[in-house]
Amino acid sequence: MPHIFCIANQKGGVGKTTTTVNLAAGLAQIGQRVLIIDLDPQGNATMGSGVDKRTLAHSVYDVLLEDVSIAEARVHSEKAGYDVLGANRELAGAEVELVNLERRDRRLKTAIEAAAADHDFVLIDCPPSLSLLTLNGLTCAHGVIVPMQCEYFALEGLTDLVNTVKQVHANLNRELQLIGLLRVMFDPRITLQQQVSDQLKAHFGDKVFDTVIPRNVRLAEAPSYGLPGVVFDPASKGAQAFVSFAEELVRRVASGQPATAAAPAPAATPAPQA
Image (cartoon, rainbow, N blue to C red; front, side, top):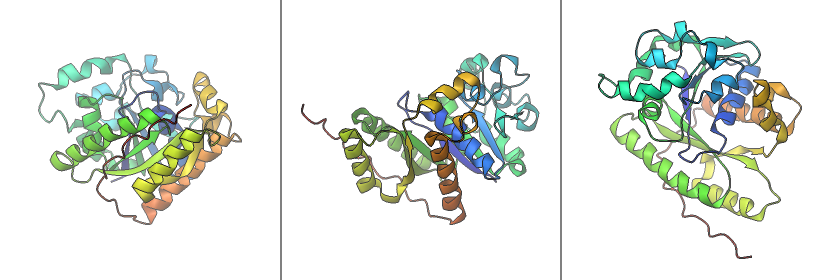
């Protein structure tokens, strides 16, 4: 089986899709065979990989309904260097259709098992809500990578996600673990961000990735060109940070670093008084 990771955070706007496409591009650059599965009906990971969601012959929607296999539905992004199982507006209706189907929370797991030999890493871009789509991702994944900004409200969202991971681990997927927290859009000049970062490291220890993704304009510009930032501007600080993150993830996987049960999230740090 490939290494299957959900990129998830129940708080919106924290850089899940940016993390997914740039981690995939970074892994591809260092020789890994990568598949992105876009589970968000907005299809941002699809478009950000250079694949037009409007012209997809088949999407993850068809795979979940078991009309086609992943091998039939995936598209190779020549520019980004990895495969994409894309999403579009059709996916918004999938949850309604899945409700009455058998194995409604395990359909993605079955599909990935059928294509297991084709990839080294599968990265699943999850929507911010806890839905049947997210549940399908969590049920088939080995772990969850959590991109988060080092800000006050992000800690509250982290608490919700850690509890979700625990529940899925206990009831649906005994392999699911919190793999690590990735600090994104980080600006060390902001005191509160540094304080939250220190608190995360104190509480979660080696569950916090060493790599930090800086706030970077080139990463923000890249999606408008249909490219991951790693491909759009390889020399930018953000792109180099994501390649470093890909290398760190491969090292962790290769070393067989044990995944421990998810710890409870820390209490939110009060914002400093002006």
